[in-house]
Structure formats: structure tokens, C-alpha cells
Amino acid sequence: MAIRSEERGGELLFYVSGEIDHHNSVFLREEMDAKIASSTASRVVLDLSETDFCDSSALGLILGRAREASVCGKSLLVQRPSARVRKILDLCGAGKYLQFTERREDETHT
Amino acid sequence: MKRTLENRVKAEFSAKSENESLARVITAGFLMNYPVTTEELADVKTAVSEAVTNSVVHAYKGREAGGVRLEIRLFSGGLLRVTVADFGCGIADVQRAREPFFTTDREHERGGMGFSVMETFMDRVKVSSTVEKGTRVTLEKRLCRMQNA
Image: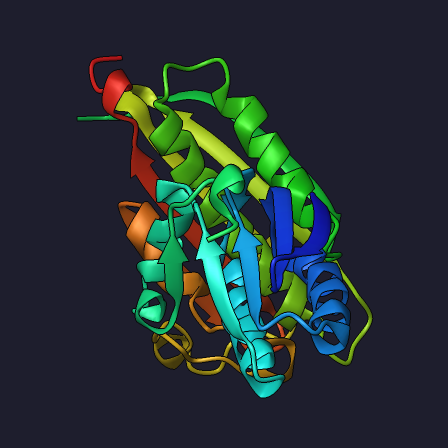
């Protein structure tokens, strides 16, 4: 698992590649919360196009970050999750509480 | 039809979160020699990950960390049976633990969806647990390309 982040156009973008499980979600959470709290961006974008595995830990992670973003007055957008990741997020209806986008990296300046 | 055991692997490891990925790798490695679909492989890996995570998070809470035993068996006709067992605190009310959103670990953002995920991705999920003895989860799936094997 690897995470990289950047800030541009009023957005804080996170790119998570590899596997999201219980073990590394703890690290991801800390990493993301610190950046969400200190960023001036109004929107947080979580790009999952390179995430090739996740279990239900990702559910807690993503819903938790959506809440964290909201506490900081920001919105969270989940970008390009694979069908597989989407299936897990939709499993318990969590998809309803999240915003998704299929836009690609070169389309982020919208 | 009497099923015969085609192959099996057994591994035991510490109930540590870094071993969740180990369990997935063992599972994927075992299945690599068989004509499983990518969908089936992902289904089984996800279910194994959930079961092992449950043991890591819950079994040895407040006590000396123990082990998790993963056993994978493949039977004729393509029946895959995976058991994940721990030797920890056990679950007093298994039925309740299996309900969606039930979790005893809110502070770590555990969603309580582990068993729901296992049930979605596997054909059969059986949980047997004895308080102070441990919990065993049995996951079964029929591998579609091996039905005639």
C-alpha cells in the first residue's frame, strides 16, 4: 500500500494504491486526518483507481474520512473506485452516504 | 457424492495485523495452481481477510496474544473450504455478532460488516465459538471451473 497526496485547485487529493486492509488503514487514517485538518482546500478527493484490494476496513476508513472532512467544513469525493471496491462500499448502503466520481486525473481542474 | 480431498495447506501465525496480508497471500498462492476466476480469487481473499481480521482484533483483547490457524482444503468437484480459527475469548452471542453493523470496536472505526462481507462473497459461512476457548469460521465456495474435476 502506498499513499501520495497533493493540493491543487482548491482540492486535497489522495491517491491510495495497493491494498487497504485493517493493518494499513490505521496508518492511512492518521496520514489523511493530519492533512485534512491542516489543508485549506474545500474538497477532499480520494482516488482509488490504483487500489486493487480492500476489505470492510476500507468502509470504516472512507466513512470516517468523510466525517472528518465534514467536521473540517470540507466535502469528500471518492474517485474511480474499481467495481470490486465499489461493491464493498455499497454492501451496507454506505454508498448512499458517499459521493463518487469517475473523472480521471487530467480532469481534476473542473 | 463423496468428495475426496485434492489438496490442503495449514498455516498458523501470530494474531497480528501484519499477518492479515500474509493470510491473503497464502490463500492466493494455494489457488494459483487451479483454474479459478479472478472474481473467485478476489472473493476468497476478501473473506479470508475479514475472518483473520476478526481474530486479530477481537480474540485476544486484554490478554496475551495468541495464534490464528488458517486451513485451506480443496475437494473434488471444486469445493473450497477455508477455516480460520483462533484460541481466544470466543463470542458469547454468535448470531448477534453476525448481524450487519454489530461491532464491539467503535473507536477504531470497525464497521461491523465483516461477516456480511464473508456471506456476500462465499457460498456458505459457518461460525462456531466457545467462550474462553476460541472461534472457528468455516468458509465454503464452489469454484465454477472445477465443477467436473
